[in-house]
Length: 252
Image (cartoon, rainbow, N blue to C red; front, side):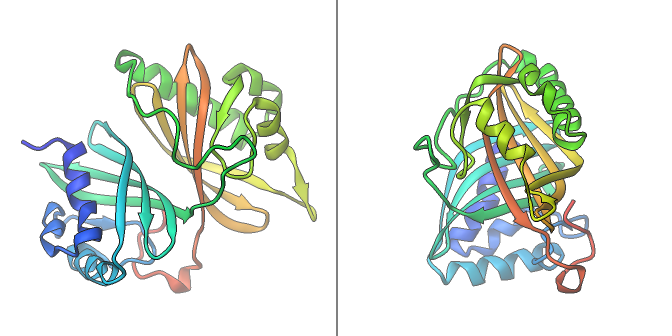
């Protein structure tokens, strides 16, 4: 039986090849689509793959993880321009039954010379998956949502390796980014952590909030070592208004 790690790659390769058979990984009767710009069901995916394949796309898997019924991937897409994506699927009986994603244009390098995708890839500390998940969830709830920035040093290593395209390495730059306000609104406001997925030393937090005054989704991938967050990647995407949705399932 194929692993969920293999299945997510088979499914997403359909974007590159345009092969409708890739959508066979999906259970059409159960499938719940959370990309607001994609129609429901495997028929919607097949049409999407066929349309995207005409742009000669390329998909590069940088990191692929499994967590129980879920698989999630950190990818580079080339759809005439480069984009960075997190893709999340829930599986039942080796079939994808639910999908979320968060995609933004490739930017950078950042002030420390890092890209949005480079950095550590090795999955380690599988015995610490639960502890690392709990650490990242607690950090997200207390610091990102409740804005208890005095706790940053409790969770974040001083030498944080940063892949956000606007930020330099280190906890000080991250703190300034989270604290700053512009025109009466915080630059970044996290309102709710919807899901936290983990495998070993990597944890993905899927969150909702505002960038300035724009309703946005935040996907943050953290690498944990010795009970501290030591590396950070993210994507930020505008959540389209409901009038533009092609399904009724919501972003989360």
